Length: 183
Image (spheres, rainbow, N blue to C red):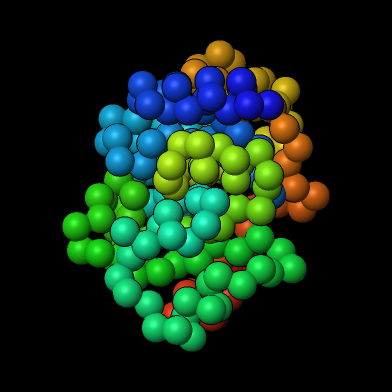
């Protein structure tokens, strides 16, 4: 798998858009700090810039440079493992790019438990954009073959691996209050 992850990192470094397995469904990803790559991903997905995107990381330290400081209670809440994958909405720094936050003053973040994606984020050295691999409004892809069919050769790379057993998007929670926004 190392060669495949190195290839995915090479493509990410050149501004490419890839698909990869997550603990839920297959995701589309790119370098979150490359505006052109994020905008290309959003065009491929037919998703509005105003919605924002999720960032996925191997550990919380990869996300901290984008977030406002969190108190100990919130930090424990968002760092502890959950029974089901959780995406947290957390207050972000004012200079966080709009192509990541959309029309929001929060950033959607998730610490991945998928070993392939965790290794990808580690070798990449930071977070990645992570949005479900589907055209906006359609069912998310749960296999590399489904990704290939949905995007018909328009992605730069598909990293194969096992996605999660849920085959559904993560739950969405407010990081400050813990309130469930999407079950």
